[in-house]
Image (spheres, rainbow, N blue to C red):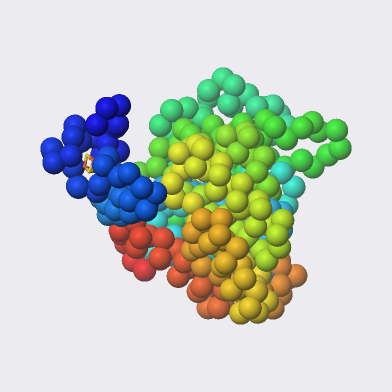
Length: 312
Ligand SMILES: Nc1ncnc2c1ncn2[C@@H]1O[C@H](COP(=O)(O)OP(=O)(O)OP(=O)(O)O)[C@@H](O)[C@H]1O
Ligand code: SF4
Ligand SMILES: [Mg+2]
């Protein structure tokens, strides 16, 4: 075999670990292709079960529906019985608190008073901190205690400085939070791929890219897939949103498939969603869009054989 290294680690054909794929004896392009296909199929079949969904980042171009997806994923997780923390890393919009039906937390993680001190002196973002160890003044909790929201901080005044430190806060929180069984944290990250530059997604195991039917948005999703792979996140899925017709939905599917982006589901452009946005009210659980997003989450959990810990 000369300098040949078997992709499965077998010492030689016919020895332990060999699946007889024929790669090491292939001497034509067709034989290589057939052997590579056999190897890929074997690797797919024997891949270890992916880790459970514990830390999820919802990404995408501006205005595609990240906050909508984050809110309904979070509420659905809570409905399945999970303890859910939502991290709002958006520096400007109050959308997410409204969509969750929660008040804004009394203090954002960065308050004007403490000027990032909590991170720098390690007072509370420390290794292995649990959701419930986040001080109450930084959290807004639902009445049943299943759903909490933290915000990294909003830019509210002119000359307040650049938002990079807010990105650092989000990254530290995502990296250091200890998420146990039956718990999940979801970050609604800022638009585009800047958050990847700041490392916000580094602590996550699942990236959801929300994509609307525009080439710009598809290209951002492709970058998100590329960056997710680059930091070792294997579970990246796209949600196609605001689809106005079945034809556009099919075209989107083709564009994503061509870019090897796995699609979790598709949502139509919805008058109900617009009306909730206009009135500043959360989607009701009986809204069609809510049901579709909850179903996507069920698919994601089933795919990873995750249980719903308490009730549906
Ligand atoms: N399927 C849909 N049908 C109709 N309107 C939608 C749909 N999805 C989202 N929207 C609307 O699009 C707007 C942007 O949605 P959302 O705020 O969730 O996007 P975002 O990606 O979080 O935006 P940003 O980048 O500003 O944070 C909102 O007004 C929302 O109500
Ligand atoms: S036949 Fe395939 S599995 Fe067996 S040693 Fe060669 S490359 Fe490895
Ligand atoms: Mg948003």
